[in-house]
Amino acid sequence: MKLPAVSLFSGAGGLDLGVNKAGFKTLCSVELDPHCAATLQQNARAKTIWQVDVRVLDTSRVASILNIRRKDLVLLHGDPPWETAARISHEPNTPQLREALAFEMVRFARALQPTAVMIVQGPNFLKLSHSPDSLLKDVLAERFREIGYDMHEAVLDAVDYSIPQRRRQVFIICVPQGQEYEFPFKVLLPEPVNAGEAIKDLPPPAKNGGEPKVPNHVDVTPARDSDRIAYVKEGEWLAKSNAPPEVIRKLTRKDSAKYRRLDRELPSPTLRRGEILYHPVKNRYLTPRETARLQGFDDHYEFRGPIRRLFGWVSDLDQHRQVANAVPPPLAQVVATSLRKSLAL
Image (tube, rainbow, N blue to C red; front, side, top):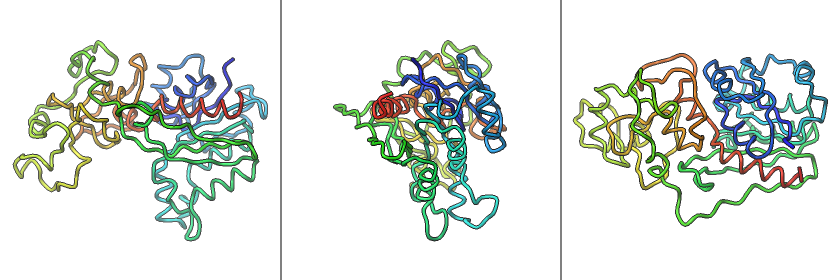
């Protein structure tokens, strides 16, 4: 039997997908961004999608509408944008920034009393300050302790779990006080899964406006960008290339996360929402589908919304940013499975 779950700050649904594959059933996903909400709706299977700001929801009404009685919910999970928390660390006394969005998970947990809570945050979350004399994670742990949960946290790297990407994220698991929980051990492999294996069997991408053979496998690289990409060797980046000064401009050799080409023999660097990696051998950007492969999404999972050109701007989260912001589904599945085993669910 599938175990009922509710998702907050759902993004494009990577966490939902992994949790569901671990034997849960996400009944409702809450996400403010319209393109992410459209992606969730496109892939929904008997799941309610609410495009709304989590902060305005009345938790008692949520329970009533979803027909969830207190303590019936098994898992509350979410991936709150942690940039707000980063700003808190620098401006702890600013009234509108005094609470990180992660505390919304506490508000819902207090009302719904799920068996467990899973939160995913950026890798620096554990270092952020809530005030001059306290870390944000310690305040969050105390809030959960007040409502009956012990909080466990760990930094997990996707590459250690058979995912072809080096991606470190903080997983926070809250379980009933006194309940033991251990994060899953690394999946030990002879060598890391490489990026080339993840994308090599995809057909040529469709050009912008064309119909792709695989969903979201569309190339929108402008000709001027292809010329610049040609200077970059496999596994290297523009500032390290022999491109002329007018192409490199103000970049320095330390700018290794910008304008970078994938290496087929290595795991991908961390996908970032502001940068799109170059294809390892073609003079173009990776397509949204190729980046989704690096995150561990199945090809049948479709992303909605525009595809952003690197120097173009679109409102809300385009397909590349949706993928880059997502929790890798296979990693979410491993953690959710370990949680089920710990709680004997």
